[in-house]
Each structure stands twice: as structure tokens, then as C-alpha cells.
Amino acid sequence: MATYYLETPISEEAVRRLKVRDTVYLSGEMFTARDSAHRRALEYVAEGKKIAIDMKGKALFHCGPLVKANGTYRIISAGPTTSTRMEMFEDEFIEKFGVRVVIGKGGMGLRTTEACKRFGAVYCAFTGGAGAQAGEAITRVKSVEWLDLGMPEALWILEIKEFGPLTVAIDSYGTNLYVDVAKQVEKNKEQIYNSI
Image (cartoon, rainbow, N blue to C red; front, side, top):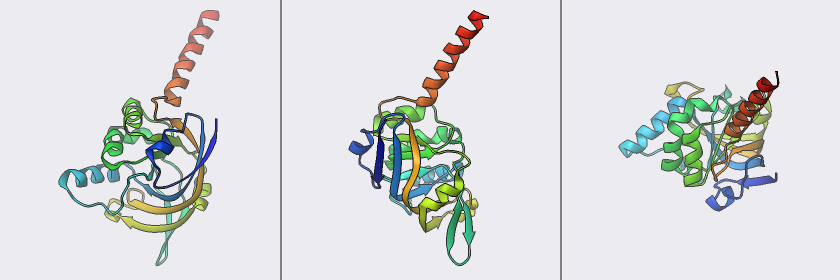
């Protein structure tokens, strides 16, 4: 296990150095996207429409931030949302936009794992309940798009400094910490049942 400090845009080479259980701190530009923003971004690319951010090499955060709006925007808290809701979109999202780091909680499935392996990306877990800590690492809201989707679902484009700690839970070699742990749990359960 190693610790990495990375700045966006992140190269494929840098991402392929990361392994499951490594710790990552990110600086540069990150954006949020939940279900509705994923859907709209993929619709835009299918229709040839321009998106307000070049996502290549950037970090995507599954988050609906708590925002203070008073002439300008300030992120008060930015806790991760459950990533499995985005499983149906994430493989295509990684392929089409070149995202290098996906951040959330709860893990993702085999489609995302395969996309990380194929296109050179990782999924990183951020601790649930630490939204205030995440908010402290967000230095500025650069812009917000698609507010018609609602504040939590909008596309927030953020500047970050040493955002983390993030734990690599899916690496670019097809290792998925959540799948590995689930397999070990099943194995342990079987041993326990057999010993009873």
C-alpha cells in the first residue's frame, strides 16, 4: 500500500501505478455527477452537444453537495452518495469522457471494473459521514451546470486541494476490493457453518 498525491488532469500512466488499498489525495479539478447528470451527459455526447467541462483525466465524484448560495456558491459539505446507482452508466461514462478517477461510497460492479481495466481508470472510496472534511478540501466552485436538475443532481465543477484520503477500491487491473471482500465473507461463512 502506497500513498499518492495526484493533480488533474491525470494521465493513464499515473492511474495504472495505483493498486487496490493505495491511498490517494487529489488536487486540481473535480466534478460531481449523480444519476441525472450521468444520463444527461451521455445524452449530450450522443447528440453531439458540448459539455461545459473537459472530463478527460479528471475526477468524478458521486455527490450531491450541500451548497451555500449567497451571490456566489460555497460547498459546506460534500459527502459521497452510493455509487452502485451509477453502475448502469459508469462504463460508458469512463469510455466516452476519459474520466480517470471515480469517487463514491459502497463500491461498484463488474461493468465499472471492466471499464477501469480497459480504459485506465480507478474507483476510489471516500468515507461516508465525512462530508464536512470533503468540503474543506474544496477550495472553489468554478461553475455549476444543469441546475434545472436540482442542486444535488447538478454538475458542480470544483477546484480541490489534497482531497482525501481516498482508498483505491477498484484498480485498472480488474481488482475490485468489494468483490474480493464479499468472496472472503462467503468463504468464512461456509467455514463457520461447517464448524457448528
